[in-house]
Image 1 (spheres, rainbow, N blue to C red):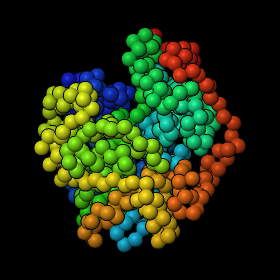
Image 2 (cartoon, rainbow, N blue to C red; image 1 turned 45 degrees about the vertical axis):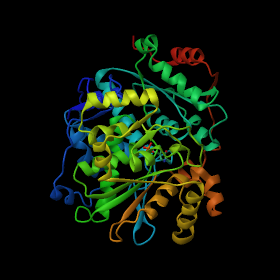
Image 3 (cartoon, helix red, strand yellow; image 1 turned 90 degrees about the horizontal axis):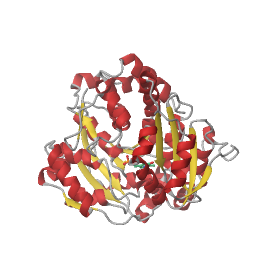
Length: 466
Ligand SMILES: *Cc1c(COP(=O)(O)O)cnc(C)c1O
């Protein structure tokens, strides 16, 4: 499989190349040159497979040429063996029409584990083959940091330096990062805000000297391999609800547009999806873009669903490319103007193309709390604030009653205990597998929020390649 950039001028790469590259050299995002497509019979034939076997069927067309099917199977078996539920992503029922796809059974209790557990193993596999080394540098305000650290801890060929704002992440989130003890894991608490940490990381990516000495890499959701791994659970859920004979809708709590774009990919591969509902909180740039074509940023409002407190959704560019005639040079122009003015209008073809599959909805704090209370009182299900935004959007969507609607549960409620307790009166317990989180020893280094301090630390503790 060959991959091309959404901005039309970076070289095409194979799967191994895009996995290690992250962003394309022209600033664009990589996508398969064309979508692999399953026939209805091939999809019907997937019913009843284990999660790992389904993952191999769905991902094999994307990894062809870079991994044998046996290599892919071995990586999936290892990655999904870390999940605490035998079904990996089990489906549970709310009521006659509404379902919940539990994506939080991985080691750090958020759906990001589904993709990152595989990505950590892909890095190790490709790097050992090339005898190469990566230095991952990231900034986190919560979920991504812990999932990325868990995914690469102890793996060959990778070091990870994860910056978090000192004193500004929750105890659970900090401990999920700082209690992972492996020689290749470096937690750094920055004296400053998340934005300061983020600015330091961005600067390191453009520091020629650092990039020459270390292969600096990112693990954010622009990485194609992450999206690819997320396509699998759309197939898993739809097959259980009667696909390919029956159409299914999905409601997805959305931040960077990665998770819901994986649903779009599943549809392009032939999975009969009736609707993809993009659920946002009050940080609603995607809702405005999809409902009125207005993609313009505002300032971020902090909410109880922090992983969706985002103003620019990087993966949206992939949809704009696919629905805008796949014209990389035109999109590069559109994105340059967006980056300059922080605002753009979608073209007619982008709007009409997106409207064929996507709808959107926005939930404020009261609607989010009501959805948590409804799930608790009527279905005995305790859900987290992100999932509640998805459920709110799902119940508003007004789809025909014979269409099952699956809400993606993106985090375990115990990750956001205070908000859940306020809305439902129930304080969710941490699952047994992380139950000793507060007894484990922490390790992190506190640094001033300056670029030089972080650069010197990475240079001293990292693994140079040149
Ligand atoms: C990251 C995250 C999201 C948003 O996912 P995107 O792929 O960025 O749209 C939603 N909920 C939770 C709990 C997350 O951690």
